Image (cartoon, rainbow, N blue to C red; front, side):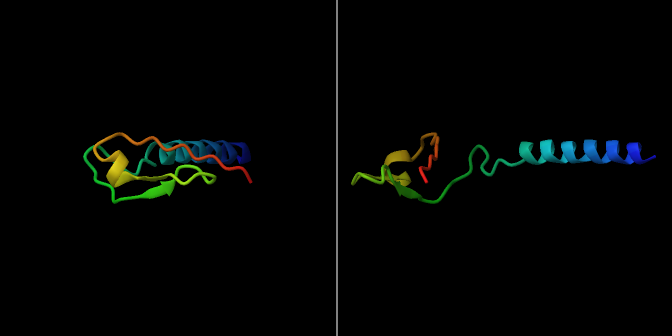
Length: 67
């Protein structure tokens, strides 16, 4: 009986994790985003802004940290 409960719990948690990742997309086709901006490089003076550089384009953002 305990193994059956453990098996059920295991499959339930795996199913929940997979479904939550599948539905984690925030924006859909046709959604509009507000303006967002960020410095291109912490050491440089350039600044990237969505309204100027990214309007009507697909924006792929990779974030890297160096703590």
